[in-house]
Image (cartoon, rainbow, N blue to C red; front, side, top):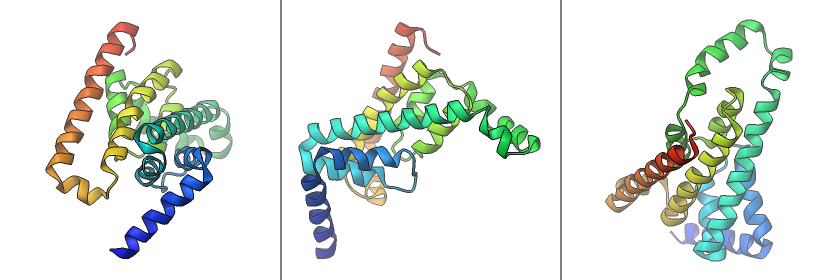
Length: 192
């Protein structure tokens, strides 16, 4: 237990001493390297810069990183994939992601909101299936805000989060709010 406290204290101190750019960079780079723990980086930002500061740093970094990742795969979708993959492989990939191409705005927001969804995979699929830029960006801005609030609030391990009744209720309320907001935005902006 002392070792865990030591690691948390020193990691928070590292982020604090490095400033907001270090906190921003950690969350930003997670969008491209899915094995990195977004939950830990958000928790460190919240510990280092307070809830509001940690939220703003983490939210802006994950939205920017996710959108750039999406744009990259949107750009290379037809150009590089054909050079490096066989037509048979491309056809299999296209068939397996056709369903994602028809995703509704509210479904996209919910997928992005889920704290345990691999965001890098969502970014890649959205780019490869050519989800509309505006639709993806607005879904990111809404969905990621709830994800960051969740990780900032929870700040503990996956197992603890799933066994704590208060955390489960919080997850449900967060998903419900994200769904309601995405429905409202979808109707007002005529996005589907």
